[in-house]
Length: 441
Image 1 (tube, rainbow, N blue to C red):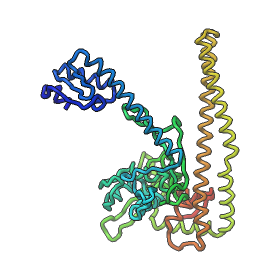
Image 2 (image 1 turned 90 degrees about the vertical axis):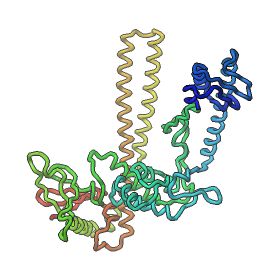
Image 3 (image 1 turned 45 degrees about the horizontal axis):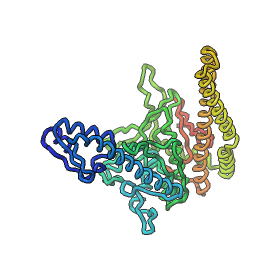
Image 4 (image 1 turned 90 degrees about the horizontal axis):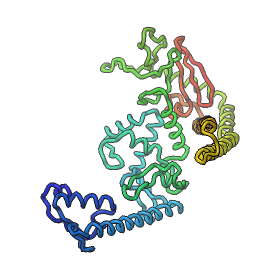
């Protein structure tokens, strides 16, 4: 309508009230002036304002300001209501865009069995080694609709499902917030407003232990400096001891009865010096794993005891928490000293040369302390991830009464951190508890 008016197709726009035209004073006045220049008049019925009237713009400015203030008041009331519900621990789920839940008769989230099975499938595929891209492609190929009822899955959609704590029955409230009520711009909450974490707020689709394992694996893949496509349970876990490259799967004789899947160093034919590490068949790798697992399983009780001790050690972060608290206090103190230094310069109580020297020294100390604090944060997070990984292995070993005679994907993912293959045909299985077992091709 505005564009038609600016093009000369409309002479008069009749509006019920100023608040229906715009709730932003600047937008309202800017648009009205453009319309006046184009020869289009606006009439506001409730306020009886004609924009071609000499007093029209003054009245319009006053009324637009009142409309903007009303919008701000409504926005604040709505925001207060949302935050009150958050503080009360009331969970809200966007059911129309959320897979696995619907609003129950009591108003609380209720599991949809068919959709919950899709969520479990996504978690199983990820734990088995598939990448989020490969999972998205598989779901699309199988004709499974997305949470938004679309036909094509995206990698980001799979990642959101894998990282959403609501699937383990908990809820982190106020992940984002509205910065400006006029532009409706939202921002990820990085501590600007309170967040609330509600445990056991609704029925869980994914077991908390499984969810934690997935978060550790997500973090591991994200922080990995090796880019690879995780399309198999072995993807990203088999490395070359010669050049350090990842082993990738290759298909030989794909269109014949002799079709075989082999694993080969991705850097084998790169550069002038070819990698000497041998390839191996997928069945060989599976048999070697069973053999290594048999050796590991031989002293099962001792292994469980060591794992329990390791998990207890990793979950005891009191010493690192104390160091973190000390560094945080040091940062606060340095921030205050920098502020005092700047104020001293502003009031000319110290010379410019003294200010520059002191300020540079304080900034250097602040940066060094901040780096130390970030390193401590990373160390604590790594301890947590290692504890989760060992917990997964401990759970599998506790449940396992007899060693499986066939390859077990779940056991592989729970037990093995990575495998290294050397040119002399040594295959070293690195277990998640730090134990190494060597086999030969």
